[in-house]
Amino acid sequence: MTGKILAQIGVTFRRDENSATGVDRDEVEANQLGAALLMPRGLVQQEIHRHDLNLDDEKAISLLAKRFHVSAAAMSNRLANLRMLR
Image (cartoon, rainbow, N blue to C red; front, side):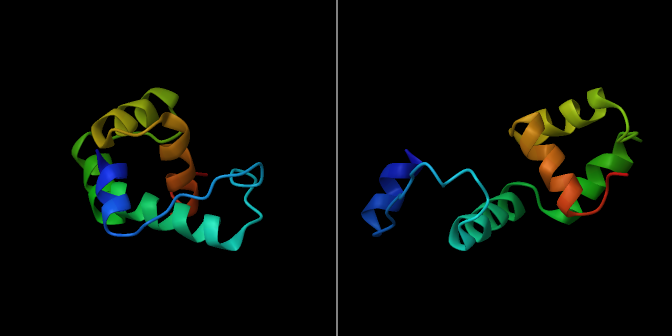
């Protein structure tokens, strides 16, 4: 559904073999924006404190991922980019 809405307002998707490599600046920036929208710093911090989570524990990261409806890998990347992981 989201894809249809984006297509209606003129957003196009351009995926190729380099899309997931982290070398295309536009792709990296788009991924960072998506992560910030899906997992805002303040809300992530709030959930960490609310549940007294230890981010060294994979179960804690999985719990956060479920709370934000993202993959554990996406949550781990976001936490690393926010410098919340050791």
